[in-house]
Length: 268
Image (tube, rainbow, N blue to C red; front, side, top):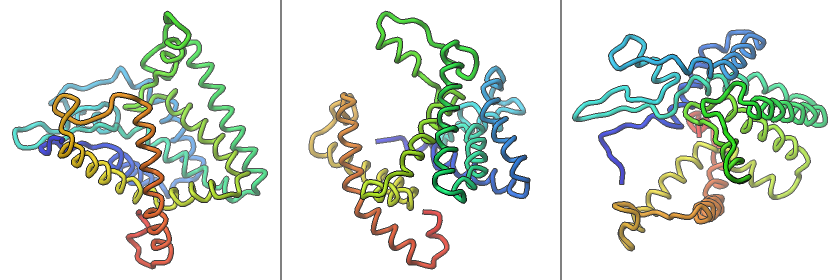
């Protein structure tokens, strides 16, 4: 499976570039970082009409920042930027300046999280409801209520539109507020995964690759030249089972990471 002459710059690439951008700006005051983050998150959709053709002076930089495209195409090697990083730089800046929320008292923090979540979702309803700004795919009335809802929720992810960020960050704020009241095993499970996110992410990719290779060897291709499932419910089932099975190695590594003094473990 896969074509090994193409390098896909995806999730880890976007996270790494965003971290480097944050590191370069850490000396700036919190208020400046907050303003920059807000300008990027709320303003990057206005940059959509800007584009460059291959060979033009700004093509490579704009491909990295805002447009999905190939950085390099040749007979031996292709490099494609699949996750434009500009919006994610804005998100990581806002995440950094939101850190002091967790120095507040729990009740105060919960109020702030609820307010932020409600504000994000309320703004989304306004902007999306009237197709005002923040999405390259305006919704239209459809034949049924379900199709209409699907059109409304059809947000752009590459790069993430303002609407995509409002719904994901708004939901995250509300979930974090609810978690303030969790003091049980379910909360501890989430804490375990969150303590070593990169480890879990890399581990699940290799487990999926091993499972795919096993299915191809035993059952053979069932989707053209590939093996796969054609029901969304099966994808959810696979995801849940995988998360359950990987909890124990993730818990072990979390304990190892926090008991070790090795600096490189901090990045996993």
